[in-house]
Length: 212
Image 1 (cartoon, rainbow, N blue to C red):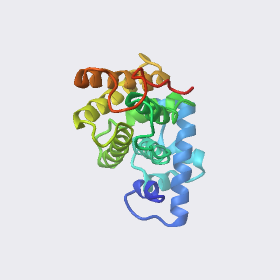
Image 2 (cartoon, rainbow, N blue to C red):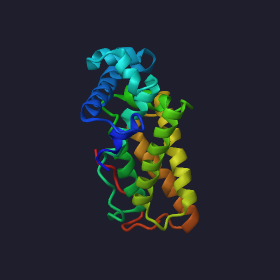
Image 3 (spheres, helix red, strand yellow):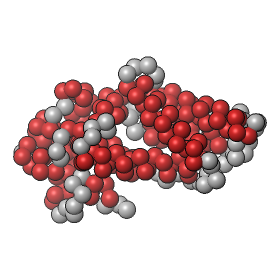
Image 4 (tube, rainbow, N blue to C red):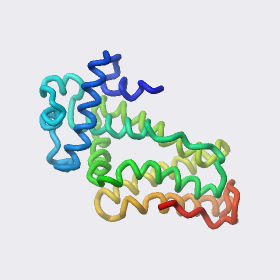
């Protein structure tokens, strides 16, 4: 599992030196997009920042969107595991889970905005990583909500999460508000299905506060 993010860059095995170069390019992408934003990001500039030749960068990454998708995948894959049934209300566990994902980007909202834009790219390299990222998000939601959660609830929350990130990227929502927004959506769906707003969690049913 630890070498999976390395393999995602090109979908082939890399030597130690190649993996090091790929890592340098990915880290340079984070710094470059923070300075220039999505519009100003180029593979050539990332290569220059990483200290490698542009031709070398293109050997691993087909576009700036490919670089950004790899960056987001690595950060998602590095998150601490979600402890299933960790206590508290269902919506509180979900809020904490989403908060961990959002904290990947609070240092630079430009990064998450750029990554969100990149994931819309339909090319195979980006789609491959987008599917991997979607799988990680899905499993984190299931772990937070419990294996017995209705799959429809999970699907709706995944769509709500994606929509919230798009809204935040357009400036219509703060990224810090996304966890609470998802928790509220979960609370509404659970109330509709169970009639009491408590879901499958424990506690007083009013939801857990998201830690600052």
